[in-house]
Image 1 (tube, rainbow, N blue to C red):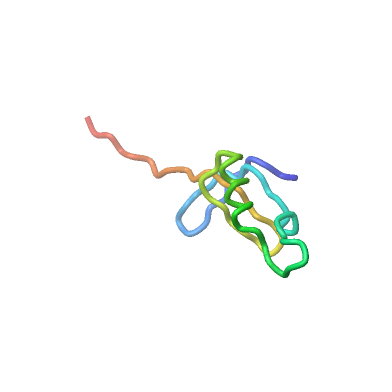
Image 2 (cartoon, rainbow, N blue to C red):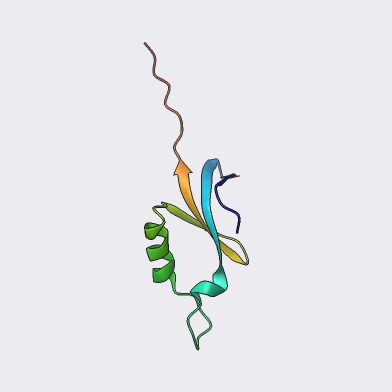
Length: 71
């Protein structure tokens, strides 16, 4: 499991905190994913965003854009 790396996507940069295979969130006996469980896991990890690949959910923290302060 790879954790804590940066990913730049659609003009946003994310710190990837955890990668988890999508099959860990599958609903037993159905062809679907338990998205409520994904959201709960995201909150438990203290992340604010989830990205998805074909095989994994990427639990992320969004890096806010820098604000220039002029004196």
